[in-house]
Amino acid sequence: MTKLQVSLRADQEAELQALSRKTGRTPDDFVRHGVDLAIAEAKTVQPTAATEENDDWKAAWRGIFGLWADRDDIDERRAKLREDNQSRDAELQRQWRRK
Image (tube, rainbow, N blue to C red; front, side):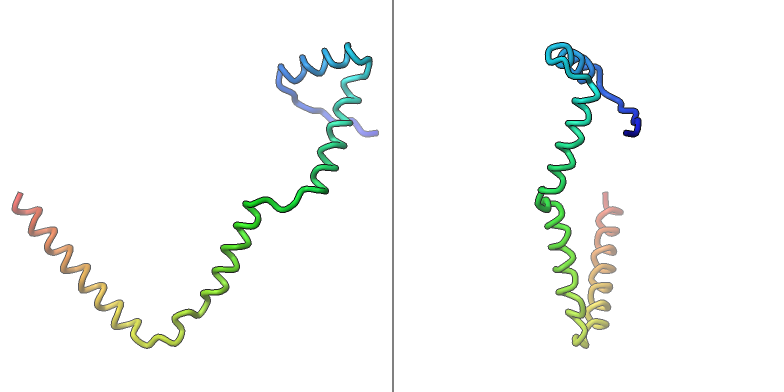
């Protein structure tokens, strides 16, 4: 066996000591048992929703790759958006100066 230092909260340590006195098992036995349970649980756990969501967005991203590749109006659309933004900014500046 190897030694490992474990940090416990005060309430965990108190409960562990009480359980040890009650059962006659050492605190080390309980810690080893807890580690065994955690390992067994980790081996049987299904992927979490967060993992599935991560896979979902990746799949969606791959699905839209090249979506606009055949569009030939991108430059015109960009110019129109820039013109609209400049017009809106100019109007906001005029309104601001009036106040």
